[in-house]
Length: 399
Image (cartoon, rainbow, N blue to C red; front, top):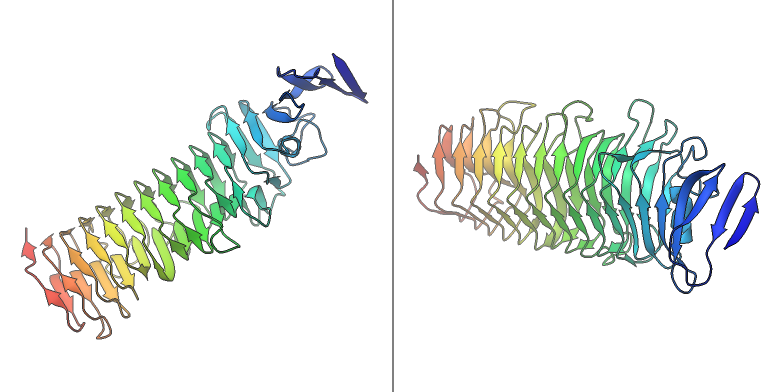
């Protein structure tokens, strides 16, 4: 065994070919442990909590911190975080392709923002080029809303085939998760799955830039106390082929549940979600040739009774809106509202209940060539408002 001695620090170096954990210790307290491959390249770093010798997990110059561990994995690998509390006072960047940040348990291994961290807690990717195979899984993250002036928990940039899974994200001063493409076509086939994002100052989830074929599935996004009363819970721009499925979005302190503002983009699937008690519309959608199917909406439009639609289609073409259940609880005005040139779309096989306004509303003569098929309604103000042109109507029946 070889040793490298520094003042107050003992690093045990392995022999060639050794793969067992090599501890990084200070005064007999283990801060981290490193495993090497046969070429003596670090491939696995374990992180242990220690606020005395690691007051800032973002200090890459301090051996044993999370930021230090990320710099060791020059060819990718795994950072495994043991249960405990980890304070982050400086942004941590993980930019090597194939690097995974995996924690013992999202309720027990928690990264907490220091009061002065008015920036991003974790930057994933951020290399100015595509990075593939990044993973963040089973981790807890907590912002410091009361003392931060800004702050994002996870900002994933220019990644492909990344997996952000089963994380607990709480109290982001601004954004919980941001997935971004700064180069068109780079952010491809990323998966955001099974995360819980709770109480964000701004949008809890943002997808920005020209992204392609990403999946957002089985996430819970909501809260009731700390929103800015202006941002949507989920904000998405310029996304082609996105699948937004099986998510639960809820809470009164944000505007829309999902704002999809991507003029000219297409191939989006919004399916099997539950969106409830949001301040404005459940979904504001501005894209083409996409599907909003088999979702459940409850009690949306809570900010102003009778002012919002559950589904608002704006400048959309070639849409299918089908199989949705809208229960307004008398706070929602319209079930589906088509406006500002919405065209060549089909609204059929939906169920509308307890609306103060209209089940399906087609507004403005520039809304053209739409088809309103069979829908079922009960306890609504009216079944159909049609100011559009060339609209094909089928029977809409009361329940």
